[in-house]
Image 1 (cartoon, helix red, strand yellow):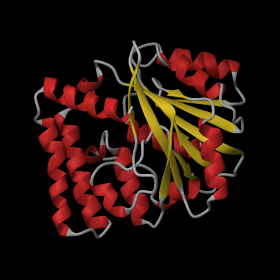
Image 2: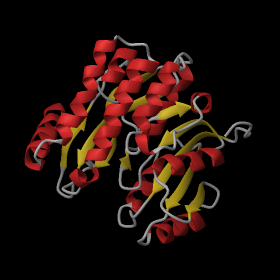
Image 3: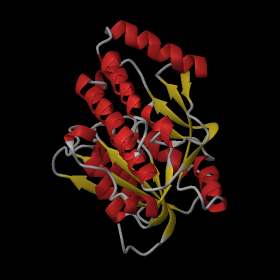
Image 4: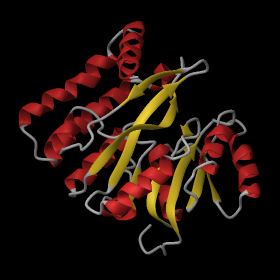
Length: 274
């Protein structure tokens, strides 16, 4: 993405995979933003359903606003987002997923914050969880995360984030490595904080994430191991006290929980925040 002329304020990068049924709602939520100086970059990651065809229809209808890329095979979100980044022309980079919803003022409020706070490179928001029946939960992180927060968990919700282009460039985007699958965002924040960047969380739910009965199936144990690995990296790269490495055990213990127990604790935590 280096050397690309700035053409728009915000580039929204979206890796899409087997989300044909939910993609229209996700794209419509971007089209309905109160902030309009954006481009949407979609990259289909080898979908096996009609995801690409749905995206293609939107591309035809909104040719000026939407770019559509395609991987010939499934390459993973890390690779796909980097591909989107190479095509991005915005001053700020926003994330979005193909089965979620950005509430109307999301981009407006995030852009306003970065425009008026040059000392920050990252801004994200609280996020609501919903299923086919209702909004059932909410997640919130520290308003101004510090380095020590990164060893506990990812300090920002990835999908609602808005990040300065130069922060992505400074850390060469997302690491494409098996160790960072499903934790590409967590590792990204570690790299950015190690490089001297910092961020803020807006304590207002401006994004809604679909998290239903199938969500547990995406949380495979190998991804828990990846999370543990990133925690160890955080201790090393951020020069935190060595004893903090004990936090790397948490995702492993969570991954060994019986399914019913994990589901109960997961929903109880997010419902309490809601």
